[in-house]
Length: 276
Image 1 (tube, one colour):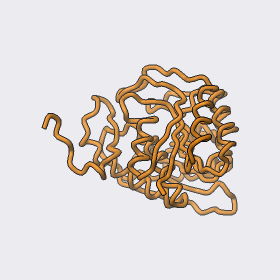
Image 2: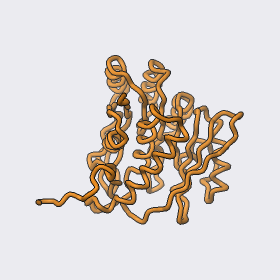
Image 3: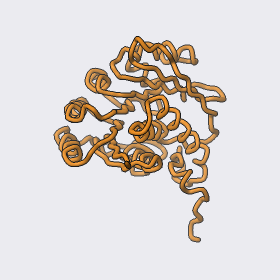
Image 4: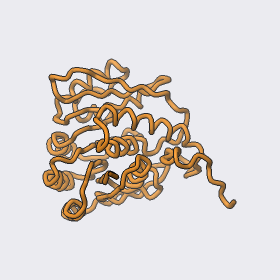
């Protein structure tokens, strides 16, 4: 069976992040991708220029249109834009309670700027985290969700992970890409107190400036894999996929800033020759 996987997120006209990256990651993992758009974003490889959030009722209408007609096997949530959209998504999720949900809490830009108002952060914490199967915050986002300073080392990550385990999601994947070092380390733990094990996923840090959309891509790949695998295996396979996409990112020539990863590196083994 081919899984039907839904992305609820904002757009990226340059194709490297958001809905566009999610659909590519779904396809690369052999899933059929669908989308609900929360915001239209003017951005490129240099950054975000403007954001227009859609009306919450229209977001709800998109979500209902999909779930009323199509079997949904997994859902990935990215940019939510505002508290009204969060509430609309939460109501929609309650109509498909059996569907696994991967929440990538897009809160902090690579520049360090906070992208969401405090009421939206509170709405994510109160309404989406308890409905999530897996949350995938990076270190700045995890610090916003759980409070406290941003970790500076893996031990600090472990302390933050313990605080995040009480936020209501079934699993927490804390991404350590903001730390320095030769390896990029992510930590996964169950949200249940009776399962104390912490799983560590380490991958070599790839030397490339083309890192646009890495968070979107990882969380989307996890969502696409969940219909076939348990959470730890889905995370392991998604992390392996993202490492390959980063390793091959320089084969693409997209923009003059931080370009996208190569979502189809396993399907396009030889770079296309423009004009051939």
